[in-house]
View 1 (tube, helix red, strand yellow):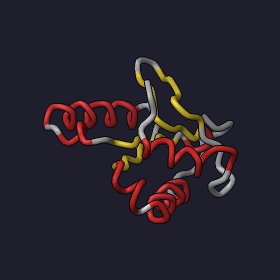
View 2: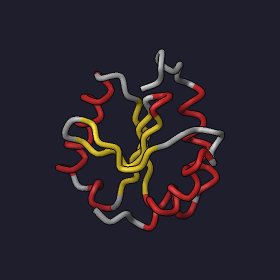
View 3: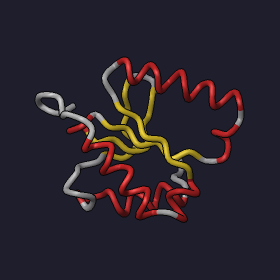
View 4: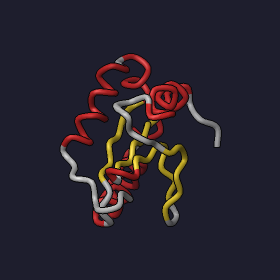
Length: 109
């Protein structure tokens, strides 16, 4: 799977603990799912959504997936390509804010 421009841009900000010292994995697999980015310490999933996520069918699938993953103890933050490419500082603040609201599980994820 080829990363989008938005995913590449965000990865440059997340890799090597560049964002608030948080460790992220890229294209992390869990069961039948692959997360765009994953922070194990907070069980935080970051998904960067392209235009196809706007379709009604894909939106339903995303909601079903997010509900299942939330029931497994994950927190999901969905970002659009546009947010990442045109509002990067705000996007990074959203990610940091999400970690501030989560108590890390014992031993991380």
